[in-house]
Image (tube, rainbow, N blue to C red; front, side, top):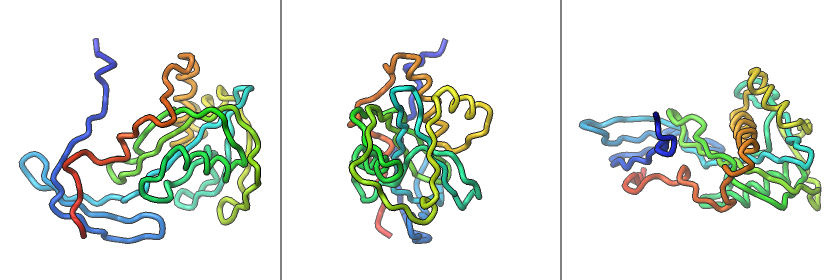
Length: 216
């Protein structure tokens, strides 16, 4: 029998011998690292990401706040939960989550917990997302003006079970929404004993000791 407690991702310290910004974009960059691993040297290119947060807002009726907006890379207006980038290096993720909930949904929350942490595409990006569960919801003191893809955001409150059903039927594909909905359903079934403190350590946002990258 497998010891479930032993199932854990392990951080690995490698020596990065060269690191270059291959392309500098408006939001994130493409980086090429050369590093030693095992008996050889490996070169990998990946998206050098700022990190992000997402918020599953759950009301007293057990409904999840969903928003739908256009996402150009995939050509879909997909259903999502409020989410956004960490705006500056070292930004507190909880404060970022509060900002995104207010800006995208005009809401505040009294109770915050960590629901899940995940890497979006560990083979091609260092993006890590922290998902919060927000409860005790109330209207934000101001309504934010939205532009670009956010200008026509559609908002809908959906029972958590219906969101999970849509995920399992493969009708919803946004990764933050998928992870958050399944984690929330499992957490609710366990009386929320799976939740983390809002300021819980976030290992996924810091490279292991020894993996510092040299300057370009």
